[in-house]
Image: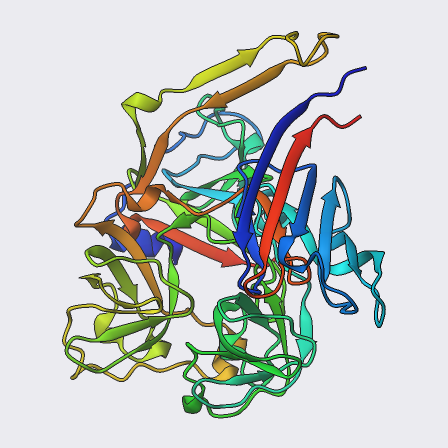
Length: 314
Length: 160
């Protein structure tokens, strides 16, 4: 009985040591990688020379061939974390929550978390931020890490908060934003000419995009509420709005108690663009393929070769 | 508050009212904005004060198959793929996004070069000698755009 291999795709990359998503255009049934740079390495068990994923393997798992500690031999393993994860491009996927400790009332705040496995650029969703509930339920981008100790979320002006947080739960958002541009939470608006808006995560806006600013009363700068402004890109998380906000009421975060009672959040909502018409709504950032985890992506400068296949399962 | 906000922004109702009729257990339905929600919170919708099931509408001629009922000037459509944001409440519970929309708040632009096309590959061929496999697929190009975000309201809620 013949079983056809419907898709077979080959590729290679030079690793930067960081996990990443590989867009294949399909969900593979098998994914195989060879670490070309490390094939001759010995006695270094951290090195994964070869790894592969087979259909329905547990999430984040991988079959690996690694050095034997203290010997010039290799051994086989089935790892349960840091491996592969397929993605079909449909639903939002979050990693398991990591419940951890204190949050400093600083700008930016530092989140104590010995078990975190985040890297700079990851987007995490914060909940259960006891004592600092105004940031709960919001996504933020990781801007600094100390492995095994803590991580920093750079777009939160925590120095203005009345108290530090005593606990938190964080979940990495595995999937990218499907379509850009999207709605963003405003974390700060400067009193300047022109005012500069900071968003909770990378905004994805371009100069010329038109956005509506919504500022609820609890966020202070109500003079800006419901204005449609034109974006001038500054950084991935900031943009200027062409409005003189120097005389406006200062932007503020609600208190933890106000957040617990329920309050609206300041938002920026894309409403159009003055550049290429319709281009923004067509920017599809989703993918179908496989996530290559930190234990199988190779070390910085390693040359990795891979093969992805999809066939028929029986 | 949702209806008040949309009306303050000059949003227009999508559907006309359904006039009352001489039928037991039915009630007239107001002209309405339309809401799109997840099936996960249908029970909470039914618990809302003033909820009217679509089964109680006096006339079902304009009732959509995906309609669950109405509350005041909002009629609710449901889908198992209704929008939700996982673990996004203060306490880590899922947050459901109920989008309430007025007339012409958004539109879909169909691209002329991307008309819907159904693709069928019959069984057989050199890789399928036992003629077991056949493929069906479709593709199309579409651009949805929000025309006026002031005529849309995202009512976010958790499940009770």
